[in-house]
Amino acid sequence: MLGNLSKYTPLFLVLAVSGLILLLRNIHTLEKFNCQTVSALYQLQSKLDSAFRSPGPSQLDRNQSHCASLGPELTADEAAEEHHLLESVAWPEPRLSAVPFRQSSDPSRSFFVILSPGGEWRVGGQLEALVHMHDFHGQPKRHGGDFLLARLLSPELRAGVAGRVVDHQNGFYSVLFWLPWAGPAQVEVSLVHPSEAVQVLRRLREERPDRVFFKSFFRSGYFSETTVCNLCLPPRQPLCNYTDRHTGEPWFCYKPKLLGCDTRINHAKGGYQKGLLTSQEALLFQSDINIKVPIQASGPDHVIVLSERKEKPETERSVNGDAATYRPSGFYYQDAWQTLGGVPIQQFNDTGAITDCLRGKVVNIYGDSTARQWFEYLNAFVPDLKEFNLRSPKNVGPFLAVDSEHNILLRYRCHGPPIRFSTVAASELRYVANELEGLPGGRDTVVVVTVWSHFSTFPVEVYIRRLRNIRRAVLRLLDRAPDTLVFIRTANLQAVDPEVSLYNSDWFSLQLDTVLRAMFRGLPVVMVDAWEMTLAHSLPHALHPPPTIVKNMIDVFLSHVCPKRKSQ
Ligand SMILES: *[C@@H]1O[C@H](CO)[C@@H](O)[C@H](O)[C@H]1NC(C)=O
Ligand SMILES: *[C@@H]1O[C@H](CO)[C@@H](O)[C@H](O)[C@H]1NC(C)=O
Ligand SMILES: *[C@@H]1O[C@H](CO)[C@@H](O)[C@H](O)[C@H]1NC(C)=O
Image (cartoon, rainbow, N blue to C red; front, side, top):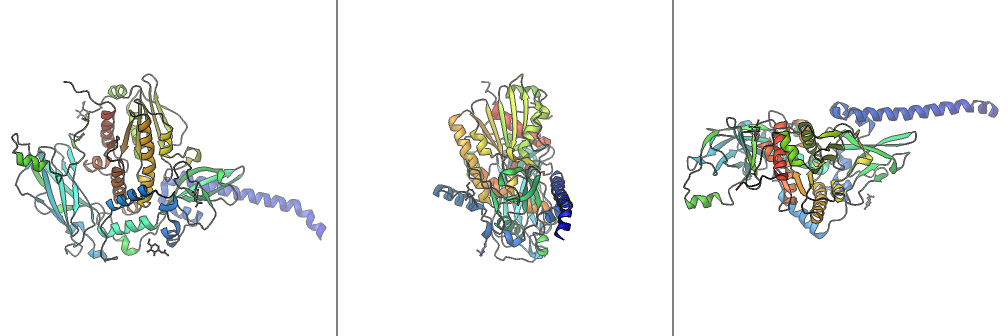
């Protein structure tokens, strides 16, 4: 019998080996399939879910994962700053935890009125409107927390300016506009999310930092495996700890079963967790009902702004200079962005002017796809700039464009994880702070940093830590080379629907953006206010703002790189 069995040993061996090969091939095909189609994320979700057993809602709450505290301990100063920043983005909490849907804010039953104490409006003055929110029964709301946006537009003049919304926490909101132009001006107010939906977003941000998940492909020899990665993972399996040595930025993947942690080949967006909402909560996220829906005026929604009075009485002057008057960072006039004070904005319509401006410069752009838009714009618009083919994956980079005649170098590199790009090679995953450490800097070095969108699914502390590392590196760069020009492009508004809201709502972006501005306030960097530039324009909101808006951002950028000499 034994002899009989040993006769078949070679056959068993062949069977076992071919089985193993088949298994490995299947793992590989599944991986390839997932990687190439991450953009079709929603359809693929079910496949991804079966490929990676998704953690249930209770498995990744912060009690177990402690996302924010995974990094190094904060110093006392850092903790104090974080506390202050979190207070600055505190959002009113409702008194009741679960309000019936029909008692949530209904934009179609809410309205605003333009207040006209003096009966006339003048350039340099202020316009105020009062918004009164109501629920679906038509009952007035008695608490605040709705997320509203407001702008003043003039289609005739292709002009626009962002308004400021003040929550009185009793169902009333003031909307304040600074008046930059003479002529017609139309007030637009919209409800981005009712307060009840903001509560849901807040809960998701704290409890479900895993709602966008990531994955890495590991390979060594014939073996390959894909595992789930994130800033924090419940330790239900052994982990690979990819925490960055220099910055302390945490990153983890589940350890592959057969391979070591040093066999990580790439990083990619894994997918979006589904089933995040109860059916009651889902009612709070309906396009055309309560996501980015205009609120109508009761009475006129427009005014005619008169030109500035030549002889201003002293009293009025001091009223206008009052701290209570809201000042936007800029406005559109004839579709061209103008900033208030500071460097005058020139229009770089002509590619020759751009080449002249960038002559001899090295422009380093770091960040997400909204930073990549600057690279793409300059690369497409300036014929002398030739993209050097680094054989980088499409939309991922790194990218390089060169104008050797005018000695211009333009570079783009994406920021480190969490980044929801399709496949990024593990060897190309770099943190912006570390990249900045590698720049000598100087008067021919220009740096652009845009980091926001990929942080929207995480608690704010995660973003604060990232910005603290970047800010530290910026300050060291400016210390060793004070002539270096550093730009920070802020977050922008985007198109939101019921699904996008849960991962990328403007509410998340607003919170991050408030923190970004506070953390760089007073530092010698140039803020390019993408938030106001998208809010004040009549074009539809988009994660990647349309070319007209990008052109205006580039005008702001180049106006600072090459400020106009005063011709006096
Ligand atoms: C988990 O955290 C929530 C708040 O985030 C808290 O209310 C709850 O008590 C915590 N549970 C445990 C077991 O610590
Ligand atoms: C990961 O590594 C960092 C240092 O590299 C360490 O401080 C941290 O405690 C580690 N985290 C875990 C969960 O092992
Ligand atoms: C730039 O182009 C815009 C739109 O075509 C035009 O309105 C503006 O006058 C131009 N500016 C300059 C300085 O050429």
